[in-house]
Length: 219
Image 1 (cartoon, rainbow, N blue to C red):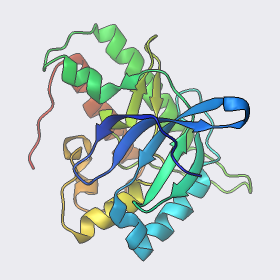
Image 2 (image 1 turned 120 degrees about the vertical axis):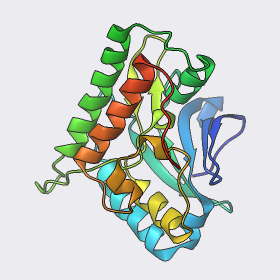
Image 3 (image 1 turned 180 degrees about the vertical axis):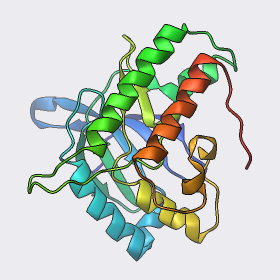
Image 4 (image 1 turned 90 degrees about the horizontal axis):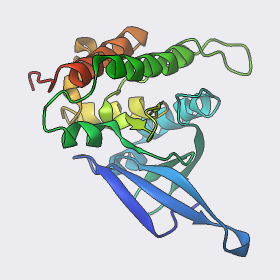
């Protein structure tokens, strides 16, 4: 699988990761849109990070929930790995927050609704049982507004399950703080494994920023 042009970049991380809206050409000039995540290029060159990615994506491919962006495929090109999700209309929650310029311009009721949808998606992943009947207890571990899409009608879609451990693996080796550090639970910042409690902490931080205003934390 290859990313087809044209595509539109909607976010770029400091680690070289990107979020794109791209189209894949099919027969009779039909085109299928998709949300494409270009991962940190160092993951493809790191054996342990690559192994973690393949392990976690195997479970993420089985997730299905109205507030989770479905994973379609994993690809690789000269730049590194990229992940293809279902096509979703809308914008990143991060872009919405940036446009507010630090002001809480939505009703608390709407902030509660968005956060509830995020929590429903997290609960589904945390309680996930795979096709073999084995509980996986999938944790996101890197949840932030840049991993949530907001549709025009206000529905939230969480994405990012399946590669956060690989992402943290290369960041830890380079002793880097991720750009979304302010949303991470203290134990995750200490390089400890993420779990359901870590994700609930991140969702709470997102709710605070939606309802009150900018969230700042120590670097």
